[in-house]
Image (cartoon, rainbow, N blue to C red; front, side, top):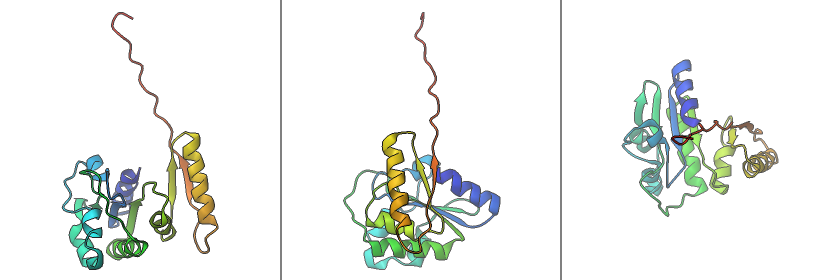
Length: 171
């Protein structure tokens, strides 16, 4: 969904858009786009104090006109931790580099997750058609609505695609 949103915003509005994910392990954006990124968010966050707008700009991978990518690390699992301060600095750098920033935050439900959501102009929460997923979206919406100055997120339900029926030979 984040890929489609970023693509449509970049293409239809002609504004420079950056697509990124906060995943430090098991990032998926580069796989979805079939792109070999120059750098990942893990590379940037491992630099700790050196994280600035120039480093972020150099790490971007061009996908198409008006769309750059900075995916999460997709090669395995890492134990790198990101502080709220680092996440805020990262998002601030992205905002200085593009008119539109689409951040896939995953579902860690930690301080970094909520601070990243709170810093957004718009938040779109997407959930599966399952009670646990719907409950989690409700919890996030309620938590964010209690914070001063934070917009209540838009929630949407991802509809399941019907699975094709496979019949066995002769039956």
